[in-house]
Image 1 (cartoon, rainbow, N blue to C red):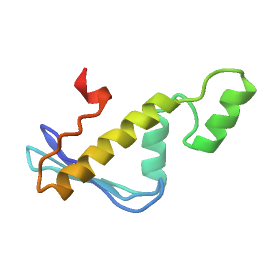
Image 2: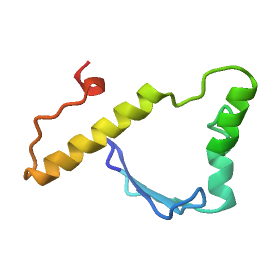
Image 3: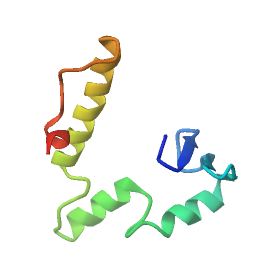
Length: 100
């Protein structure tokens, strides 16, 4: 991910990383394993297990999050990126969530 003041690399296909980032001042950092899980837990209102959070929402009678509208918007953004790549960097498809 490219941000204004940070470049982030996420590797692996689970919560264990590693996640590395470089700030504009040149400092480099990496988190992996338990350190990464601990840092993520401090940012979460619930657990890091999406299946458990879904069951908890159903059991408590509250809507699950992310909801269907959030999921659809995310998929529309990704599809627009794919379309742009297929068309050499341009896309006519602008998801409603981005148009606001």
